[in-house]
Picture 1 (tube, rainbow, N blue to C red):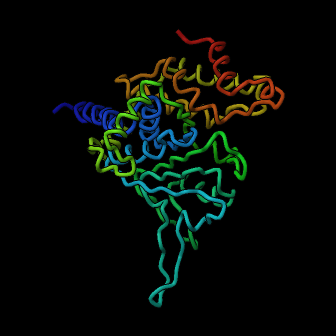
Picture 2: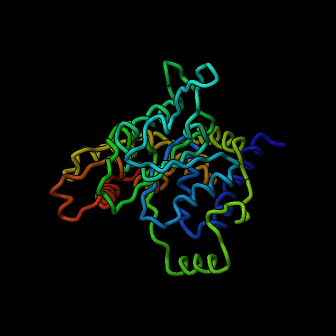
Length: 320
């Protein structure tokens, strides 16, 4: 077996996850690819979409296809940090640590903006350092580990918007949109045939990849080449957001590195060992849309972060 064989096998196995998820979720191919790219670079994902667009089902199908453990937490105003990360309890005449749902591979933080900042912040250490500290003891989280959080973009009453410091920890903000009429009819046909979206086992999903393939994929993604000219292009795009009169907050250096990592994962999933400017353009919106802030007067005029970013991408010279 050649040295490249395990890498090729890992890519094929991870690509096969798309077909398995399609057994449960119709459409959303871009979101699925974004989730896979995030896992390949140890990134976290913020999913934004109206209720009923299969966000929870998507995460469960992803976990089942990758042989990963997943847990779901419904974030509510009365949720406490200990409900997420765990707590030390006294039982049987001794103190012991009871793990919270954060001790898993994929944590689905449902409607993360419905819980107060104190509980939201409980995830910061887990997302950044992949550990939790309780009573002065650090406890490592399983590997792989990723937070996939959801937000409802239409209901803001009683919500707590994520602060910039925390939203910046997410690699991607992926928008889960409505299906096309054809896709929605396919959904209806599946339900008419008896599909139960709450019973993942009944959907026929197979675990076509696992932690081993993810580890091999991560090593291969790390080796993907990025030409200095493409690096300079990423820096130029980030600089354009800082100079844009439409933004009060531009992209930080962390944002630039996130674009680099995302572009490497995207290139590898496409079967290439080098990053192109098109890879950068493809990942720019989901990687940057949550790292910029529009000026209020610009927002009142109907502008959106995606619209302004698209204009900047069109204006920044592309390396040849």
